[in-house]
Length: 335
Ligand code: ATP
Ligand code: MG
Ligand code: FE
Image (cartoon, rainbow, N blue to C red; front, side):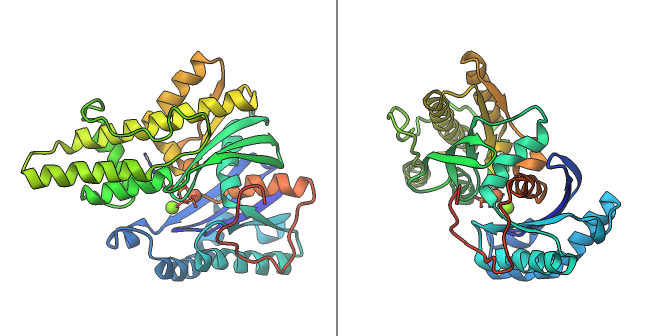
């Protein structure tokens, strides 16, 4: 089966062609990052307009790169939430039009389930059950993936998402958007033991996260140093902050894997691009005899191939949408 999928939930316009759920024929991503950088974050209205301008060209490119025609497509998948409503609507409207015109099934896909399924694209041998740590710009969740279509949310953040924390801290440190890669680069030359930032809920026997206290602690540290006129080693701040976040994520992921009694752990979402997070997770998983998977960089951040992969597994069990499909900005995992 050849699935065409569209992804427009945030600031990437993407179209992909995926064969049989796991073979990527093309995965075209048009990023709007440079456009939003001057505002320090994604401006929803600009994102929606840009998606409208980009979408047809991106689909054409995906077809050309895969050497396929529209008539070769067996189904159309699309992200319908969570995300920015105006941005989502562009993809949903385009996908509906194509599914209708081609007379093929339409499959609405949850963006977070897509992030999880990026691992299936990268690792042909991977199968449920496993525990997934989903860490992205808007979400931080632990998910027990019991089967291809059975998800159980084990815990999530009470406030900020991990990626959001990276982005906000980067911003106060004067680094450009998106902040995750910038903090990671700066942290590489810093001492992660330099400052003891809080590790909220780390010792607690629950699977929830909280990053707003960490964010305030970094802000307070920077402000009080500035007031006292003390010099700040930004690389040390970045390294200590990153180390706090990573240690909480790793600790809770291990707890989740034990609780779900699985032998496999995967990480997903934009923050899964973080090298320290991947290193620490792989070390702990090896100690605990767990298999560990992390998608390659290009499949961590938003892309349509992961949406096509997820769409394929929904199609296999007849989970298709009709032309009343609408954008659901706050869609929850497993819905
Ligand atoms: P969501 O998936 O929750 O709707 P999103 O789609 O905007 O949100 P993604 O595109 O999955 O999020 O991920 C973007 C986030 O990943 C940003 O917050 C960015 O700072 C973060 N990120 C990217 N690379 C890194 C990195 N190397 N280290 C830490 N964070 C990173
Ligand atoms: Mg993005
Ligand atoms: Fe995302």
